[in-house]
Structures are given as C-alpha cells and as structure tokens.
Image (cartoon, rainbow, N blue to C red; front, side):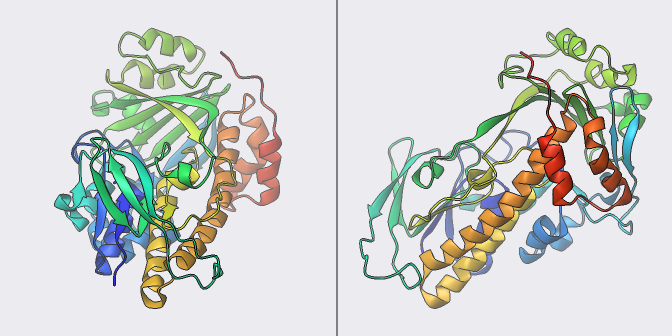
Amino acid sequence: MYPKIAIIGAGPSGLSLARLLKLQGITTTLFESEPNRSYRPQGGTLDLHIETGQLVLRECGLWEQAKKHLRYDGQDMIITTKNLNHVFEERNSGENSDGNRPEMDRTALREMLIDSIGNENIRWGTSVDRIEMVRKDNDDSTSANTKTSSNTWNVIINNGHVEGPFDLVVGCDGAWSKVRGHLTDKVPQYTGVTGLEVHHSNPKSTPELDALVGRGSIFACSDGKGLTAQRMSDGSIRLYINSRQANPDYFKNYSLPLDRPKLLELYSDWKPELLDLIKLCDDQCRPWPYYAIDEDSSFEHVSGLTLCGDAAHLISPFAGEGVNLAMRDALDLSRAISVALKNGKLDVEVTKFEKIMFERAAVTAADTDRNLNMFFDYEFPKTAKKMLEMMMQGDGADPGVNEEIRKARTQPESN
C-alpha cells in the first residue's frame, strides 16, 4: 500500500520530488500558495551540476528535453574589481567544451518540471496555515531501526479546510517554511549582504554593455559591494546589485527610476562601464536580502515529517548550489521512499535520507559562506588570492584555503 504523501511548495525540490514519485506510481498532493504557474518571474539563470541537477533531470526522464534549454556557452565567467581589473576569467564555447555546468533559466526548469507532473496536479493558490499531528506513534518498545509505523499529519489550509491525514508531509516551502518549526528551532539568519534584482530587457541597444556581460556572467566586487550580471536565454541580462549592509531591509523600499541616483552614489567610484549596468537597467526591481541557516542544519527526525531544499538548509546564492542541492534532496528522498515501499519502514528510510542530506548540506554551506565572505570582503581580491589562483588553475580549493578565507576579517558593516 502506497503511503499518502503531501508536498508543500512547488519549487525545484517539491516539483522534482513529485515527478520522481509519479514515476514510481505514487500520487502526491502538492500544495502551492502562488495562484498559478505564471504568477511571478522565477529569477535569473542557474548552472546545473553533474551529480545533482543534471543527475536528477536524467532520473526524471527529462534530460533530452532539458538539453533544448541548456547553454554551455553560458558558463563563461569573469570576476573583476570595480576598476575592471580581471582577477579570474573562464571561457567555454558550445556543448563540446570542457565545461560541465551548463546554464539554464530558472523559469525553463520550473516549466519543464510542472509539465512533467501535470499543471492540474498542483493545488495552486493553496496557502498552508499549519500542520497538525493526527496520530502519534507512542510505541516505545521498538527501536528506531525496526519501527515500521509513523505519525500521521493533517495539513490546514488558510481558509480552515483540513487535508489529510498524510503518512508523510514534506516541507519544500523555502526559507520561511511552515513545516520546519515542527522539526527544529533553527531559523534563517541574515548574512550581512543584501541585494536588489533588476533587469536589462534590451541590452543589444547598448553594445558596450552587451559586450561587457558577454555570453555568461560577470562578477564585479570591491569594498563590500558587488554587481553580478547574468546572460539569460532570451539575450536579456539579469543584474544583482549587492552590498554588505547591517540592515537587511536596506533596499526594501527602493523603486526605479526614483532611487537610481542613490544606487549610482553607492557605486560612485566604480568604472563608468559598470555604472552603465545601473544607469540603463529597466525600472522594475526586487529587494533580495540574503539569509542562511548555519552550517549544521541537522535536526532530530520527527515521525511523518521531513524537509527538502531551502526549507532544510537555506544558503546564500554565492556557490550556485541551492537549486542543485534541492533537486538532489528530492532524488535521495524519492529513493528512500522507494526502499520503504519494500520494507515498510518509512521512518527508518527517511531518517537515513536526512543524515545524507545533513552531511552534504554542511559542505555546501561552508563553501557558500566562504564565497560570500570572499566576494564581499572589503579588501577583495587581496584576501582571496589563494582561492582565485586555484580557480585559475582549475584545481578548486582545499579545506585549508576555505578556512583561511573564512577567517579573513572584514571591516564593520556599514549602516
């Protein structure tokens, strides 16, 4: 008998999990608070990694379809300073390049996953208020290694409607998860860096700006600030204006073009070519303060519940790992559920999945924290010299370098 499973959140982890379980013949109830699939833009582009995002798409049976959206030349990357002194440069060209992290627009990934499970199988516009335990397993006579039964849970919608009971509720509901509080008291903490997301819908009209970004991405960093520009599949450019600030709401009430002069003042001593990224962007903008859960995101297993993706181990976006990690969580959880169908030990298998997830997430969280502190160090690129040298040699970074950069002290945050 198949367990009754609820997935809360139609992001990368929730959609991947629903697809993988569908391939096993398991029907899930997928709740999503947004009213429809086109409710809001999904943001910029992301690089899919071999052992995470790419693997999951293959397991989902979507690899051939995904190849239509993958941009191998989108792997081009430049890291520079405010004076356009390049400190790292990577060039790739075409599907036969040495690069193994092709870019894909977030919107394209989401649309493909939605289509794979059926738009009609997502409960759009269904905001979850809370979850409540229905039956608690009080059998203390069996150990965690042999227990086969589990708690069941109801999902309470904001209008008071009750759905359930479910044998397993999976929180894939992002940074401010409604499920996490039943598992841990850890909550996201502000990283000290906040951003403003803007868009260049027609960069071809400014050839110099278009050439600056090229086919991939440019990261300009200095003085605790950064400008990150990414090429999208339609030729447009997504720009993230990032700054180390004590207040996560620093950009909260910004609007364009009204606050464009303030942005230009913030970057007043940067090269004019970089300032054009701000001067010429569209008028739409979205504040984006970066939050994270500490490197140890682990929690004690609670029967009938688990988490995936940002709900479990929120990180900042400065390693390109968030979506990849979320999708790999979904794959590992689907495999755990598959084993549980054979041995009847759902809690045991989910607990094993969580252990794997915690270990992998801790490594990624350390890498992301290292990168954030490297890019937004007030003395960048001086304090990141060893890391950048290794990147140029294609050797990655060893734990000693990670620790050295993590210990690099920065000036006090500005107000």
